[in-house]
Image 1 (cartoon, one colour):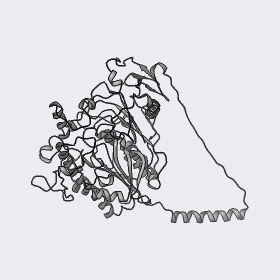
Image 2: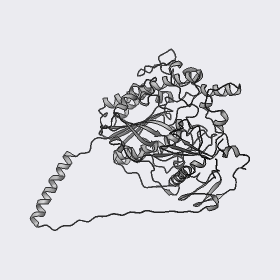
Image 3: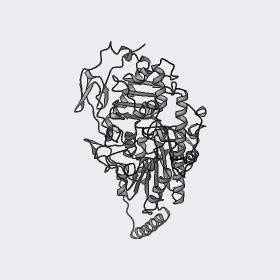
Length: 557
């Protein structure tokens, strides 16, 4: 039995239908205070004063704060191709080593499955629709965060913490994302500053040798295993996997010994077609991952050499899903799911353990601020007080937490032509996706459209041949407004339950939760697509599609 999932407006405090629009707001202020006073004799007071001074001196000597530094490692378009996440073929000895001194998060998710927006979320702690970085930063795309946004390096600077970014930056404006030391694509060739790990090592050494008494935040943006640009593919391969391999004309990255793989040996994820084109694509991806893994090893060695391996918090994750169909730019499980490891050098009891907490890349800012004991600033953005919706992951490093059972994600653009806003909630059993531009075909990024795996799908579809993919192109392009999946029992997200009456209560509860989050993060799209924002309310545009035209869509077909 199917029921019609009516479109909704997301007004303050509730999910509503347009004919019942109303607003509700609430304010919870809590104030606490204590007072203490006792009378003492003059002798008692003097004794207590002396004792207090002694205790303060002892406390100063015995409880001086430990040194604290932080290293944030962002892999580019990386997934779960490592033994840490049960891939037995792709060899990543250095990531494996890091895992042994980390808590490994099984259920980590990106805030948005697109490069620049994701990096903006990582560095601001705010989803892209709140910080303004709606799409890619470079060339014609030209997206920027709001000028008033507070970012991690800027927040840390007044606390006397030196900051550096080495590798891929891909966010703007420069003054908002300002680090003390920067060696990125803005002042270097991307191949050299983000794939050449020997050159990156030199940058790391320079930074760690400067102002050595200051605590530091070092942010590393690897370009691997992102696909190569169209002008680099003919020379270096699909994933620039030949760059620096020591062969004639390829250059030589001395800190990397390339790992080579046969297409027949790789592991094809179940959401991709198992074809020779896909396997050849993945084999090249694995080689690119080996260079990034060597870069992780380089970082660990440099921390050791400079005496900081035992005082540095290390967070390893990626910006979005792997650059294959159904993953990158999508907010299905393969597009949202990310590797994540948190290494706390002062809390070792959970090293090498796995956590079932559901985390987000927006948790990185509160984690680093918690680590340094720096408060998040009090400020207003676009007329609304900013409050972080992420939380510190440091408690996870000492004990398995309760709660941590859902996250939200948000997507608007990738390339400037790829307008497909989505809002998503993922809990322990379900994923809810709101496709707001569902009347248009889902757009494809240029690197994905040109990749051998997708070209093979296109060619086989055009020729009327089997694609060996579990979706048709029509199913991939044309999506209903609401998608609800039981990811526990349907991991490939094949059966949309959004229009199944048996799941109406689940749908409505998740819609309400998403609505609340969108208000907390001041989402400009909260009335879209059937309305526009007018103060605290939505104006109904009466533009719902004719039912007969979209009958199949509303039935979830």
